[in-house]
Amino acid sequence: MRRVLVYGVVAGLCTAALQLIEYRWLVLEHAFEIYGGLVAALFAGLGIWLGLKLTRKQVEIREVLVPVSVAEPFARDDAQAGALGLTPRELEILALMAEGLSNREIAERAFVSENTVKTHASRVLDKLGAARRTQAIQRARELRLVP
Amino acid sequence: MRRVLVYGVVAGLCTAALQLIEYRWLVLEHAFEIYGGLVAALFAGLGIWLGLKLTRKQVEIREVLVPVSVAEPFARDDAQAGALGLTPRELEILALMAEGLSNREIAERAFVSENTVKTHASRVLDKLGAARRTQAIQRARELRLVP
DNA sequence: AACAGTATCATCCGATAGGATGATTTCCTG
DNA sequence: CAGGAAATCATCCTATCGGATGATACTGTT
Image 1 (cartoon, rainbow over the protein chains, first blue to last red):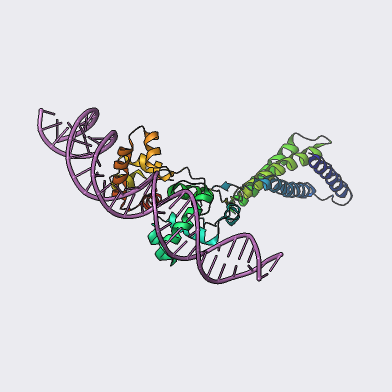
Image 2 (image 1 turned 45 degrees about the vertical axis):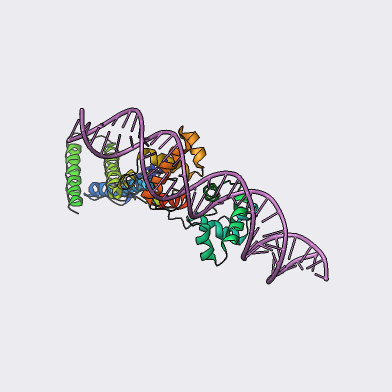
């Protein structure tokens, strides 16, 4: 609002200045048209500038919630694993269990005996507080230890 | 551009009209100020309007991609379930299996005997082509039958 | 060198899971 | 009403899993 007042004052000053100039120098017949044209041009420019100023805030930032496919790469929560005292080998066996493999299949993949797998698996169940393999997988998923 | 010409012509006509009016009626001392004020106001309004018109296209729509963490509510792929011939009850038992429950626990939750659960579970394993419970869960997750 | 942690393998035994099969009941549909 | 799908329960047998326990070996750290 203060700006409007300033503009008004400036416009008034300009008018006065023009009038002064006109009275002093311009006594031609077409002083009227020149004066009118000047005022018109001035205020037209002012209006355009004002219009631009007023609409500048209309730059609209529209936040579009894009259903970005959160292709989560899955990062194992090693902190959680450490907190539970799970060793690297145990995490390995846990991951294979989560894939739905039997102890025998896990043994083949990990190049150890089935008995060893059973030992690891038992420790995993114990550390996860699970009574069953499926329960261990479920909890491991909740704790972000497996995908 | 054509508009500018039109505006110019209109302005000229207005000026002429005002001049005519002035010559005919307004011979007061302040005709000059009145005339200037009218022209100023007219062109100021025109300028504002023009400014708005010119900047209307500048309403910038800035689309910001917000990586909204899709807390997917999980919708079971019933089509997939149907394709596999899984019955509602079997899907129910499958979901409970995925939660890490034993057959006995599932029986208690579903208000049926453990034998019934075993039957359902067997069919589920068969229809999913799984040899083990854990494998069935893994496949069910892949097929979006369970969370 | 002693020790702790991890990984490995083993055995025994009970618990759980899975396969095969048959039976009954209910409900829906042609 | 007859037939089929679904759900229910059962029995027998085998496979897998899980718990308890003990042993050996390797690797760092103190």
